[in-house]
Image 1 (cartoon, rainbow, N blue to C red):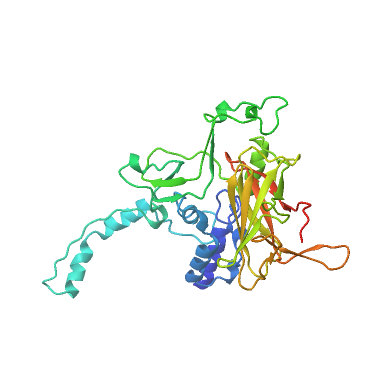
Image 2: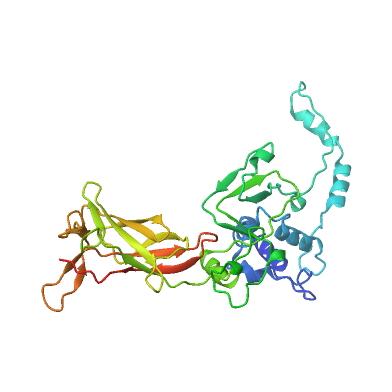
Length: 373
């Protein structure tokens, strides 16, 4: 019996049109198997191989049928080229068999059960496992920028406001003016052409809708900023400001909260404070063994504050001769005099434009030529 199972499974799986195997269009399932069918000796083993190696779990909820199961069944029916024949049972043949049996078996069973038992018989017609209709998973619809719940008798099943969305009316794109710089007004599309937001909602039970679009990652979005929105890198500088009426930098220390704060100016190539509104974020560069955390706050158009949260395991900043102001650098005692950072992390400021959050610059702190004692 086991040899027959093995031989049949080989024929069903390895079908080549025009050969001595089960012929259809020549789909060879052996190419997708890591287990040789010559090792199969039981029906249970054959079933395990089918489930574990030939079922694509990624599409089990979205696919509308069972194509692999149907393929095997069709080869079972169309077996005129197989070495081992089958009875080719289908709906018609099984209906004929049920009509031959009829309801006479009830009379036979009644001889083995108590007389008070109520019996009956009927015909039940249903699909076989090869044609079973799959469970219909509900389709979801993605709504952008505005919660759709007030417009329906049910609420959104999920939402995410950490997602940046740009909706583009492709029919209304206007090329930038000839000779314009990346931030000329003529180089941006109007509000009627671009809509941007930070939230999406997922709704179910909504008919006749389809999301037409594409979700892109951070790297692709950076290229999109430059290639589609004409937003490119901008040369900016980040400079420490001076303490009022003193030669030290405007850097303070809160010993209770262990927060070291720096006030900085963002300037253009001529060292003039910028007048364009940007957004700012900060990341740390370096080994940062002690786990210092950084945050940035925009004070005005061209002024930001970086706050360093210093753990107890890290050294405290050094007081300067200017009362209330500190430094995070020491100086060598030998010539030439050099600054040495007391913490092993450096802030990197990421500058983005506010409309589409496209990155335009990465800034390091520029230290002014201010004499410090």
